[in-house]
Image 1: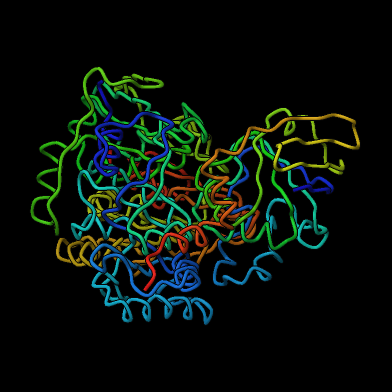
Image 2: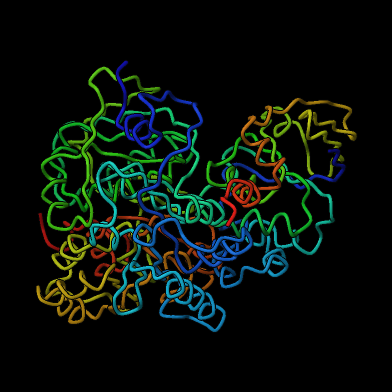
Length: 422
Length: 165
């Protein structure tokens, strides 16, 4: 029987010839991940279970990234729990401040999550790695604890939904726009429990960084995974990084999907998700004049080198508008270094933006750019829920890095073409 | 297991930032988390909720982050059960792993009003609205989840499977 990529990966990891949607399976985990917010609960659960050792130190990643560099004493205590646990269990993939990055930018960059893997992470944006053709999904801390002990996790095999993108991307339209457009079409529970499979000519030519942005936000449609069949572009990205062997899976041409959407995106302009839901999506050209107070460019969604290049293209030779704070956060140390070498950091600082060490920080209202009551931000992050970036009466508009950079220069939400010409 | 309690009603897409804002995630202490439960959705909730009370909500309850702090906060606030039209998938897993009873029942989520008194038979999935004299049947809990509940949660289930040293 024909199968989807998700079904094939799960079947192989369950040691079964095939699996079908709704079947409960226990599968082998290739990599398991926790951060400074979620892993402390996992570590407590690990001890409560009476476990003495992890199933495989090489297959566990601990990444302090949310509240680090430690924002307060309580956060410092949590970061210390991770550090101690990593030392006790000799975990090679614990990443200290100065060597770390935002988990979902760092692990693909380091070749720790790979095509054909089953990856779980105690962080909802673990679905990012579907961009490389992995079955990767977020779980809670207790699920992570169980996986750290047993190396296994149970899943209900998801039904798959197919999203076919046709046409040609307009200038300044990237993966972030494609995923926001998708969430706008199907809603924040439009793919609840499902595997979202992105395909079509637009995806086939999409760079890995844009694919990562897309799969990153599959959770914002309620999905279990967002996944893209690996190809030559994936191979080029993975081959020099991979720490382990990997395997490419593809859906059979006649695989069964619960739903299929086919969209021509040739006319699509960059989009913005208005407060307070990622499904509240409008093309930037349709938005009435909206003044802002802050811009954030970074996060696991859009803090990669390609995102910074796009922001720099807009900010080059310009200044951030008076009264606006523009905060730019390279997602990993390697990205930061490369941005430095390429002169992007100089462009940002000359534009009077603030550049930060890698952290999730403001995305979840943690630190490094919290909003006051009544303030608004344009952010390249992934959620604009009530109170997400600070006060319950603040607002977040989600966009791609070019729109965010243009908005910083204009002091209102705007199209990159307004700043650099088309 | 029988539950009796008064209903707190919320809408669709209640996200985990509404259940427990990230600014309080520098603690994993259930009591501290409970003190801020639902703060951005209803600031009066945490101080007014009584042990045994029930949350009823619309579709996609618990969407957003994977933070287990969300079901921990709800449980520690004294809430005995969450009834929703539907649940986001990570929240659904987390609730079972934490031993927080949850029921999917679109009709009940629709028909129940804030302040109603409910009697719930968790084993049978029967919800009786004592205030309005109506009865609903929730979706049965899948057998595997029942196994987790019987074991007392995922950690206890895993402990049962670990090789003896």
